[in-house]
Image (tube, protein in one colour):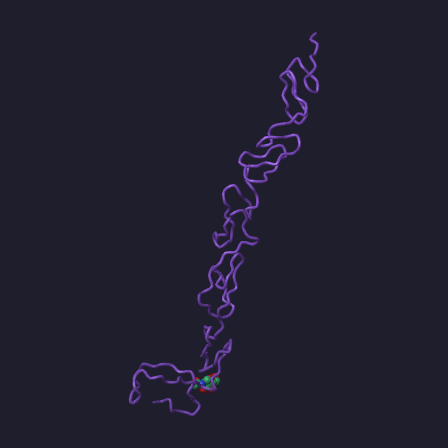
Amino acid sequence: MSVAGPALFLLASVAALLGLCSGGSDAPRGVAVGFVFDPRASCDPPCEHAGICIRNNTCFCLKGYEGETCRYANCYPKCKNGGQCLRPGKCRCPPGFGGRYCHKVTCDGGCWNGGECIAVNGVAKCICSSSWTGSKCQDAICPQGCRNGGLCVAPGICSCPEGWLGGACHTAVCSQPCLNGGKCISPNKCRCRPPFSGAHCEERQKLH
Ligand SMILES: *[C@@H]1O[C@H](CO)[C@@H](O)[C@H](O)[C@H]1NC(C)=O
């Protein structure tokens, strides 16, 4: 066998299992044979991440690294959702993803009111339950609308400003009723039917 050649070839402690029958050798098949490395070997560019230069321009990479110069860390399981393997078993996750393998979707600030954080085209988004909207599902939906400055404070519930009532804040309130068929059209304002007038339609206009 030629392993015995020039003294600069040494047996490395790392053993490789060779299943080959070497010509003329008595070595049994399938025996573990140390592989050779050249202590004077030079690797340019150099081996990274403590990889060993075993032959000219051939790096032997430590566990967790790969590539010609052992530059690339490998992560198992692989980083998901576009995560980058920083060092063995350590992924850097893009925004919106977390967990050891970037397998978890995370919505910044969470999703409120029963919303669910889901990845849509690689972007984490809150999917809101019906009746809620907004980036965090923080805004209630009032399908009827809230008019006259009313605020939707819960699904279907408007909080109305003073002087307005009703599910959509659509009913004006007149503290004194509008008389003679007059109609309250805005807070404390009556629209009178002719021939009536006055703040509460209490006056009958003289007809000429
Ligand atoms: C490795 O490279 C060096 C310098 O480039 C050279 O002198 C040497 O002979 C090479 N070794 C082998 C085994 O090819």
